[in-house]
Length: 154
Image (cartoon, rainbow, N blue to C red; front, side, top):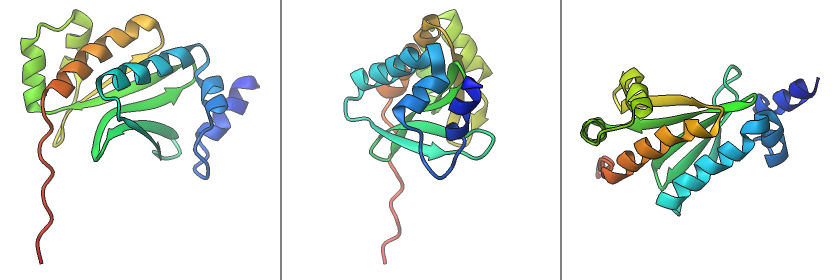
């Protein structure tokens, strides 16, 4: 019963989740969620949090953004969460040259490729699950983002 009470607001498109609701939903993973955000802010202090309702199957997710650039995607789950990063071609090449840990390399190898880059996603349920995030985020941030296309001048 307790889990279902925490679950409902996470899938209600009319209101983004409150901190207490998020922590109840994440359970033991709540400190890990905060740790991932803290680790990202150590590297990019100006990161802003932008909640996004991704639909009735996914519910709410959090984007950590730097201006127009989405740096990290976080999707809460019951007792765990998913982390997502998009690595462009240059970042993937840099990651392969960097000598990644076995865990980070496996995550990168499993990442599907999209027009924006490789969609790196992984599950975080324990403290050890954060290490690949730190590796991959460091590489993502070391490679400058592509310049945004300019609009047409009238």
